[in-house]
Length: 238
Image 1 (cartoon, rainbow, N blue to C red):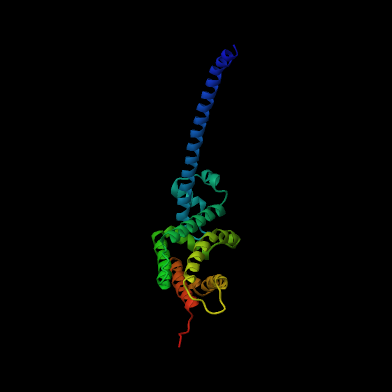
Image 2: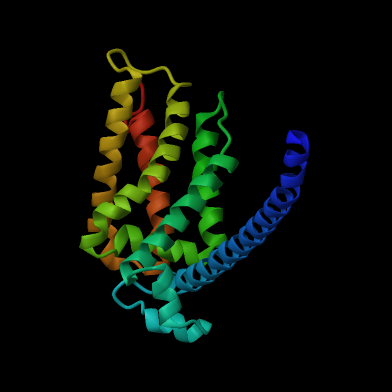
């Protein structure tokens, strides 16, 4: 009787578990579809925003224009991004993320030819920016035209790009014979300080007299020369 009782109870338990699994499965599929839909909506908004913030500085870019040009409602846009600041920062993050991955995947470290490594690094950047004009515009607006109240957040987002840049430069330094009294840590600190100095110097010297679509290329061109000076000096050896 005890065994029979267990068997008798098994049928309703079976149906309970079946229905539970069925509803859980349906609920799971529903969640997956909703997540996919949300992801697609966010991507659509982001792609539309990249065009707007890639073409205009932050102050002139408009959420209304993003919506009107892409058949998007403001309600949908603000459902995924709480403000114009958030939309812009999402575009900056996308730009820095893609550039970081592109550099990581395409720059080769030539152990016996540092000049070739450095030339390839700047060439890979050039190809990336000129193959992705919207991202190039976003980079320019983030690095040279962003409103001051977003500076700290942009610097935080830029850390992923700093990391890949530092890894490439440190690999180059690892193949060089450093001067007496200078170790790798010292060299890394000098390069970081130089990078900050060069950024400020470039903005002050070139930004006001250069067309916006030329700034990024000019920045990299002078950066290439400045890095060469830093690594190898400006005085010839006797």
